[in-house]
Amino acid sequence: MTDAHKGILAMIGACVIWGLSPLLFKALGQVAPSEILAHRTIWAFVFFCAILAVQGRLRLMPQLIGSAPGRVLFAALMISTNWLVYIWAVQIGRTMQASLGYYIFPLVTVLLGAIVFRERLGRVQWISVGLAACAVGLLSFGLGVVPIVSLVLAVTFGLYGTLKKGLDAGPVVSVTAEVAMLLPLALGWLAWLYRDVGGFPHSVGTAGLLFLSGSLFTAIPLMLFSYATRRVRLVTVGLVQYLNPTLQFLCATLVLAEPFTGWHAAAFGLIWIALALYSGQAVMEERASRRRAMSVGTSGTV
Image 1 (tube, rainbow, N blue to C red):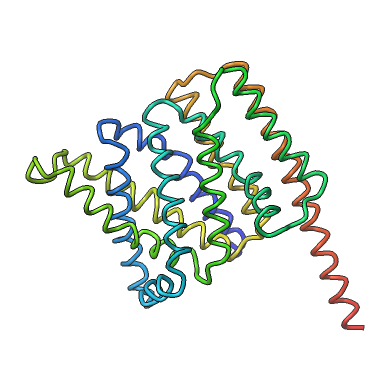
Image 2 (image 1 turned 90 degrees about the vertical axis):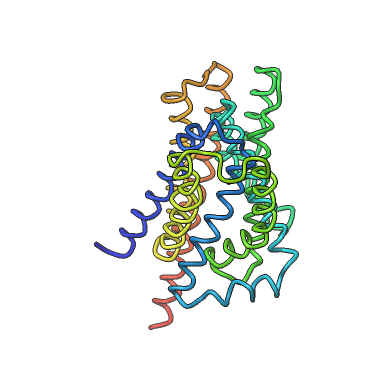
């Protein structure tokens, strides 16, 4: 098996874990979202520190915090907000809105690139962004309510990715630094929650699920994602990544039995068309770039 094939399998593994996460957070329905977030932060920190210690890279985490504390803190606030809203959405029966948010996220990232980095968008990209906006507007009109969950998840994750673009660190180091900055808040929140019970108030099974929220559903897929991005073309990573919201969507409709109306069908249809256009354009641009690189390489050897 080639490195590329291993990378694709790693990417699929990461997306499957993320995509099935609604089942975990629904099973933790008796635990408040803020409490789950605190445990997720703590266990992710422990897990990532152990990995970095084994790799001999633990020193890189405080170095990153010292070099860009403001950027790391803002990134931490964006990802923690994203996690909290996602957990809350699953628990109150809005997993479908959450999946829509992660479908919209790539198009929000394109728009942020144009706004923040002055990146020029092509016609197809503008059409894709426009279709996504139409989908949100259509769903808002049809249901009589703006899909706030979708927009918050898409924007916070888009801003998070934009901030990460300027950090000179790998994903494991940067996420460890982010959860490290949130760690005092997480520990303090749990201490306040448990102040009157004198200890951990949940069963062993619930404790195990809380541990999994920070390890299996946070740390491990991120490591798989990092492994994949080093071995697979970014356009492939982008295409495979749609498996995550697709599985979330299937969990919402087939397992959690959330309502799927004609307005949902129309909105998701527009989003899928937008993503097909966006992805197709990305594939063509990537192939054209490879042909130009091969052409330059060939001409250089003559």
